Amino acid sequence: MSAPVDLATGTAGCPQRVGLATDLVLVHKVFRRELRLLPALVGAVPAGRADRAVLLAGHYRDLATALRHHHHAEQHLLLGRLAERAPLEPAIRDGMQARHRRHEELLDELDAMLGLWTAAADLDVRDLLVDILTELADGVTDHLDLVEQRVLPAVDRHFSNREWLALGLRAASWIPLNRMAWMLGAMLEDATEAERRNLMSKVPGPARLLYRMVGQEQYLREMRELRCPDGL
Image (tube, rainbow, N blue to C red; front, top):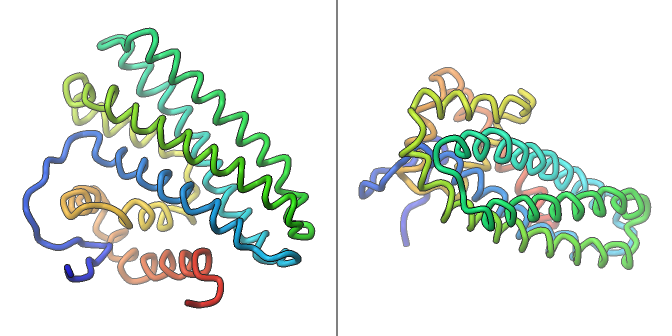
């Protein structure tokens, strides 16, 4: 069994290839993981546990906001720039746009139903939410797989370091300051050693120290509350 890895630094290991889009792959890992976990977490809420429903609904809303911004940046920043330099095949481009529309439809359905569930933690509403969340998780995972297979390989060939950094800063500009530590912790959770080192090398020293002192434990505590409601 390998030793635990410090989320803020990573550990020494075999070299792994790091490209311009490595940080974007970490964002994809966050969506895959959190959307995969959510149906089971929602499905485990007993009738009447409105407090638990409210907590998970808040987590869903954070993910939904992030996913909407992510899709917008993908469509208008990444794909928009690539269209001028390395256009996608029309079938792939149109398919990705169709997936975005379907994800938005599912998010709208979830938004409309959450209020009913958080009011009383009704089991019938809960089960409907689980079905929609499962479809969303599957759809987003398939979409991100396609992006990584057909789009991201072109990034290193068609973007400079400076240009990609500027695009990333613009894409992340919506994140509230009080959620920056959460996003950093979420990206580090499933990162490889090389991905951790690459990401943390871009975080300013004072912010990196603050994350190690406060932010990492805040993230872990929040995740324990979400994922282990009985303190297990």
